[in-house]
Amino acid sequence: MTGLSTTLVLGGARSGKSTFAEGMITDCGLARLYLATATIGDEEMRQRVDRHRDRRRGDWTTIEEPIALVDRLAELCRPDRAILVDCLTLWLSNLMLAEGDFEAEAARLAQFLGEAACPVVLVSNEVGLGLVPDNPLGRAFRDAQGRLNQKVAAAVPNVVFVAAGLPLWLKRCKEF
Image (cartoon, rainbow, N blue to C red; front, side):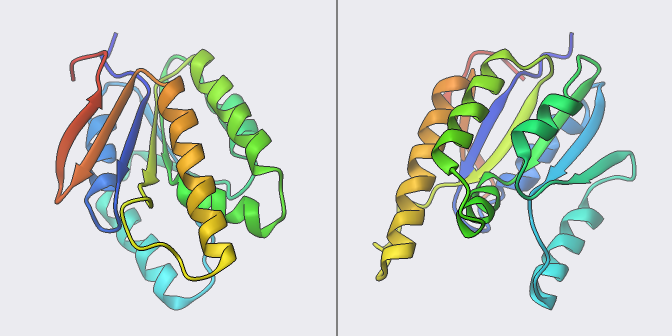
């Protein structure tokens, strides 16, 4: 047994949450899958994705899935693997833009995580600490992200908040 268990990694933009999450899985002794939810719409996003890829060692398998996250997790999850989902924030954005039922998908994700046959580390932005968005779409997104984070946090055994690259454990059932 690796000692790694399913964990939600929260933090603000550029807080170090992805690096922290990658570090949790790097030496776990399991095959490592990186489930990317980003879509590349411009050069700046391409550069961000490239930086993330360059930071990981070559023995990660990267799978891109911008919308059907729960289905892909169910397909990929098995006891000899650890999966990093980066990130729930982009997944939610993709769902909202596609006019998907993000509340139902959040519930499906939480249910899956409670029964997962492999450790899953999920990265998500904490968006409720900043300014209130000045438009209805921004406020709807902030509210949906907050509800998604709460559902996932309730479903997983570990939750960590990362600020300035440093972890603050909010919920911890396993030692790492």
